[in-house]
Length: 161
Image 1 (cartoon, rainbow, N blue to C red):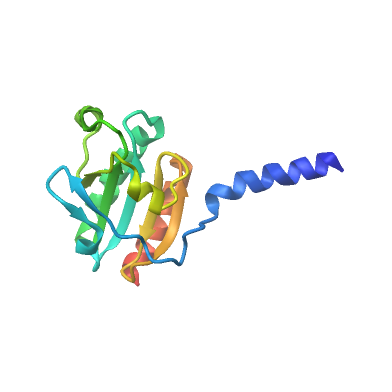
Image 2: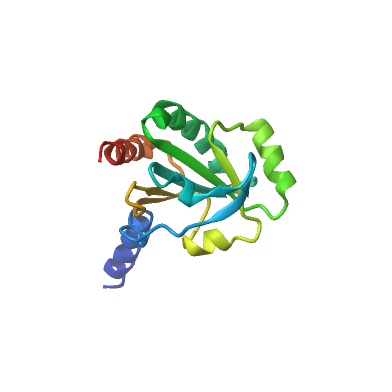
């Protein structure tokens, strides 16, 4: 019996990143300092938005940036915008990261982590796909190459709506 229970616990744990506690809820607004000026979620209300939380020490974040650059290039003209929110306490750490791993999308800074708390971020990176309706439709914890096709399909689905 214990083996079965332990197996079920492992299965539930493995499925957690696929479950979205925030799906269907209105995305919390934010107004943060950005690399190119203030970044407000409300300024992008007519677009599909991919909000990504990252930090300079996050190894999977290094892998996600090239993919996000590609998605921004591919779908930016169709009403898609990526906003990557850095959670480092020291902005200089984020700036060093960006010298090595550049971005062609919007960068914002949240050193106090208030926005991450509103989004219930559980790990790095965490991303939230927000539709034009202002609601969170998909949530992802971590970054895995094998999931990029599914994530891109979710982006395309929301762009078509």
